[in-house]
Amino acid sequence: MDLTFSQEQDELRKVVRSFLAKYSDEVAVRRLAADPRGHDPAVWRRMATELGLQGLAVPEEYGGSGFGYVDLGIVFEEAGRALLCGPYLATVALAAEALLRCADEQARRDLLPGIASGETMATLALTEDSGRWDEPAIRLTARDTTTAGWQLTGAKTYVPDGHLADLILVAARTPGGIGLFAVDAAHAPGLTRTPLPTLDQTRKQARLEFTATPARLIGAEDTAWPALARALATASVLLAAEQVGGAAAALDAAVDYAKIRVQYGRPIGSFQGIKHKCADMLVEIESARSAAYGGLWALDAGDETEIGIAAALAQAFCSEAFTKVAGDSIQVHGGIGFTWEHPAHLYFKRAKSSEALLGTPSYHRELLAARLGI
Image 1 (tube, rainbow, N blue to C red):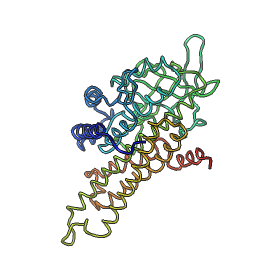
Image 2 (cartoon, rainbow, N blue to C red):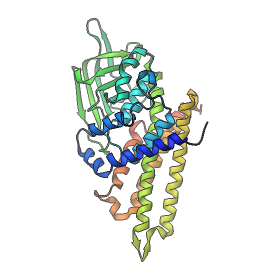
Image 3 (cartoon, helix red, strand yellow):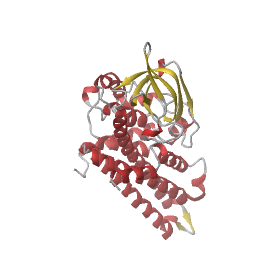
Image 4 (cartoon, one colour):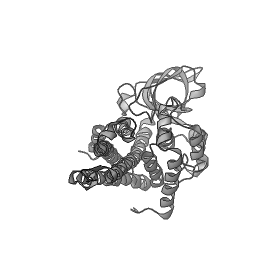
C-alpha cells in the first residue's frame, strides 16, 4: 500500500480543482440548485471530453481510461469541495460500478462506453419506501413474459438524479431472487418519474414508478445482490471521499472568516474558543480523510473482505464528520452563517443529505460489526 500521492495524482487534483473553481463556483451551484434539471449539460460534456472524468476508472476495453480508485477518489473529494451539481455520483459511483460488478460481459460492452464518454447519464434505482439499501427491502417485481420479455412493476424512491437519467439500473425481485435490470428511460412505456423535494437542492432525487415497464436483464435473474453489495461498498467509499472534500471546504471558510471578523478589537480567530473549535474540526477532517483513503486503497488492492470493512467504516465515520464540521462552520460564522445569502447552509444541507444517501451511519456500523463477526 502506497500512502503517498504520485506527481500525476497531485496534478490531477490541481486540474480538477481549477476546472470546478471555474464551472462550479457558488453562483453556479445556486443557479443549478434552483434549476429542476439540477445540472449543466455543457459542463457535463466538458467533464467528459476535456478531463475524461466519467470514464476515469472504467477499464480501457469499455471506453474508459483505466485509472485506479485513489485517482477517482481525488475527483470525488474535489467534487465535494465544490458542491458539484450533476449526476456524477449516480453515474460513476453507482451505475457504472453496478455494471462492472455484474456477470454480464455483453451488457458492459453495450452500456459502459456511453457512460465513459459522457453521452449517457445513469443511475441505480434500489431503495423503496423503506429507504433501506439492503436486500430484504427490495420489493419491486420483475416478471418474464412469454411475448414481451422482462417487465418491471413497482416503485423506487430516493433515486439520485432519477429524474434525468438516460439509463436506469433497477434492482428487482424475480421468482428466483434479486435481479438487475436496465431500463432505457427515453423509450420506456409505463415509467413515471417524479422529482422529490429534498433538503439538499444541489443533489436531485426522484421517485420512479414502473407499470409493466420493459427491461433488459443484466446477468442472471437471481445473482445480482452480491454484485450490488460490492458496488454499494465502492459507492460508499467514493461518497466518503466527497464528504471529506465538503468538510474541508467548510473548515477553510470558517478559518478564513475567523481571520477577518473582528470583535472587541481583535480577530475572533485569536479567541481560545474559536481556536479550539477549528482545531477540533481539523482533527475530525483528517480522521475522516484517513478512513476514506483507507477505503480507496482497499479498493485498489482488491481484497474483498477488507473492502467491505473499509467501506462501512469510511461511510459511518465520514458521514458524521461532515455533518459535525459543517455545523461547526456555521457556529464559527455566527449570525451570518444562518442566512440564505451565505454558502455555509449549502454545505450543511449536503452533509445531512449525504449522511442518509447510502444508508445512515448506524446502518453502516451494523454492516461493519457483521463483517467483523461481532
